Structures are given as C-alpha cells and as structure tokens.
Amino acid sequence: MSQPRFLILTALLPEAQTLATALSLPRVRELRYCWAGPQITLVNVGLRATRLASITPLLADTPSFQHIILAGISGALSPGLAVGDVLLDAGEASPPPAIAGVTQGKICTSTELIATPAAKAALRAKTACDAVDMEGDTVRAFLAARGLGLLHLRAISDSAEQALDPRFVHLVDDRGRPRIGRAVAFLLSHPGKMAELLRLQRATQLALSKLGAALRLIIAAY
Image (cartoon, rainbow, N blue to C red):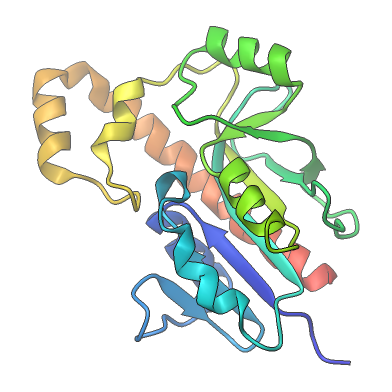
C-alpha cells in the first residue's frame, strides 16, 4: 500500500518556512510559495486565505491528497489553553489517533483580530470554541465544495487572558512578512509597544516550534 499524501496549508509565510524546515521539505523553484517532498506538499495561501485559489491545480493532481491540513498559530478563547498548546479540530474529516501534546477542540474564524480578553470571552460564549483564526471557515468551505475534508491544526500564540494591540496585524503584509517601514514608523510613534511586540514574537516562535513537532507526529500517525 502506498503512503498517504498530505497537503499542508498555512496563512503566514513564517509558518510555512518553519513547518517546511520541521518536515525537511525543499522549496519548489517553479512555485514561489510552495515546498514539497515525495508525500507532502506545503503551500502558503496568505492571511485570511486570500491566495487560496493557488492550490486549485494541486487538487486536480493524481494521485490525490488523502489528508489536507490547515496549520498555523491562533489566539486562545479557552482559559485552559496556554501559549504553545496545540489544538486539533478535525471537523468532518477522520482524525488521527490520539497524539501526545495535541488537544482535540473547536476552532472558529473571525475576519478581524480578536484582541481583548473581553472580546475573546464573548466569542467563546457565542461559539463554544476553544481558539480563533482568520482562515479556517474560508478554507473549509473551499474544500467542502470539492468534496474534501480538512484537519485544522493550531498552536496558541496568545492566551485568552492576553490583550493584543489590533494595529499589530497591519504591520505585516498578506503573506505575514513584516512591513518594515510601517513597523518602524509605528514603534517611533509608540515606543512603549516594543516590549509587547517582542513578547508576541517569543510566543509565536514557541508556538511554531510546538506546531512543527505536533505536525510531524500527526503525519507519522497515518
């Protein structure tokens, strides 16, 4: 029996680069935001999945992908989740066997950054979800229209009790790359935000490290 094929999607370029390294995937020269090995293809589809249509040719590939995973960082809604925790929402897809360090849960989607503890608590009360992202619903609907399921994997980069400045999202482009000029101007105007940005950077690095380890285990479990 042949090994299953995996398609992994990320919203942010740093997520893609970290996971490509964790999975030892070389970059595909012909495609700027794609990495691939014999059984795994990884594609960056942009913040809010604005570049999702780029995977359409891949879905017509033969043999097809047995598992499609949307992987990245997200904010916690559940007070029980800490920075670096990994959450899996299998939705209608077949989940893998239990994986050490991976919690089963529900992830909802918001088009805007959920930035305050009060907003996170309100969204949790409304949805009963454990974490929030900006791409999941879009990707799931895109795949469902093609008869495909999704495994949604997220590592927590900010806890339910942590506030974020909503302006931070404007300091990166739609691939998650820093907008250097805009970031410098922002910090010159708001020097007190440097410490907050550095804390978020450290939390993001921890979350991505945990995400890469979890993804390797999930792929191995199949």
